[in-house]
Image (cartoon, rainbow, N blue to C red; front, side, top):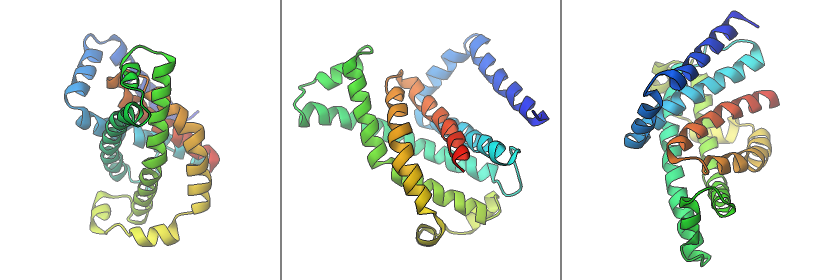
Length: 229
């Protein structure tokens, strides 16, 4: 274990202990999340999503940072994507409940189950939300994230480089993405095997914890993808 690993463990432990033992810290977190949901989503994903990529780099290459990694542009991208993900979660939660109650004639039972305590009915609604969101939204999100990753790498990992060049979306989609991995593993395997069950659990949590848990899932996926590589 390297010195950087000890530092990482100490920082993570300090953050966890801060929320656990500092009076009012957890209440502040829940209140701020409730009042400024999208802003908090930005910071949650900016920090945890980037940390997940750093862990993946540590597993692959033995270091948390390297030249061209692009911590700042990655944090910016993850933050913006966090806002998009939080918005998508709200849209799919509301829309799926409406779909189940109206399109499948549950006559309000889906809304009742989802708003109630943990039950098989609530788990069913959460699974439906997860399946619809990850089937319809996740592939577009994952592909755009891959495009930004390639852009960050090609522009030197700096904010100046990130903004000085346009995203070459058409060229990246056609020539630079390995679709055998992107479709064959990321879409075809991680979505049904990881994201369906993981986001089912997400939607069973209290609303103030859902986006935070979704951000932690990004850390877990970073580790999974690094093992795959």
